Image (tube, rainbow, N blue to C red; front, side, top):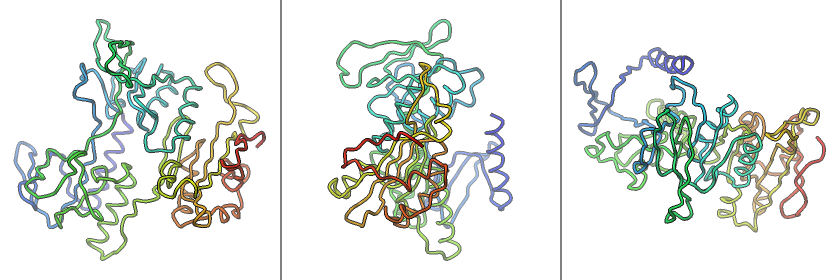
Length: 397
């Protein structure tokens, strides 16, 4: 808690150092150039030539869930006054899986409730790989279920009723008891209470997000960045980069636009997963499956060949790394997707992301001298293709 407070305090200091006036208040528009808010029991107004909307989103708990007030979200987990105990993480998003991972590492009994698939929108094979890894390490998964009811018991614990996601007409709910129930089933944009109707800014009817063209809304002086932007990756560095480039264009005459394609990201689960570019499923849709060549490999970090990781059953774990390279044969084997499951995934991906962004080909990657002995080195040595039918599992480091 103190560390999180220190981060927030540091941001406030940076704003002050840059001469930026900060108001901690909920504002709304009263006309296209003016916002109004309450501060110290006084109504205040601020008018601007340009206005940038960057409110982000808040975690969402389904409104129709009975007993929803008994659940918490990822915003709440670090502020709890007692240990979480036996925890149910609802959702298969990266936030849910990351939370499950660090709670399990702290020694808590953790279950993840998955309605359909893990990490929707990510590469399916990689998502399943890290899900299997988490199960081997001792995290539990309830697949194909959704919570329908939360009940507080006399001892303070929470009884959760589940229903099968594939047959919601059945009356065969199952129940289990937990100390903490955490929902991570998505975030909603903070756009409804802004009074945007008086500005003329249009929202996407289904998502409530703002449609923009190069961060500019349909109202020329109002801009939007971050998670509230329709179609933009919901990642903090994306919002920061978009905001920085927008400021440079507005006040420094710059001409660089935010590029939302080939944005690298990492899921910080016990087996980390990082990627840039297309998933295999997306690439097949965009380029055609017949035009793809998929290189892949499973292996172990060098240090694990001498001291293997042990799973929940006390058995040694093998092939805890997974590499995947997606190439478009019609573009000289241009790399259109690069995926890695293993240690320090974010560190590995940051450099490779630049290579993908500038159009690196498989031949160029093959010509790169690897750093030995590292996990990242294997990207320069990938030979096995899915089309060959050969085993992707390595037998030596």
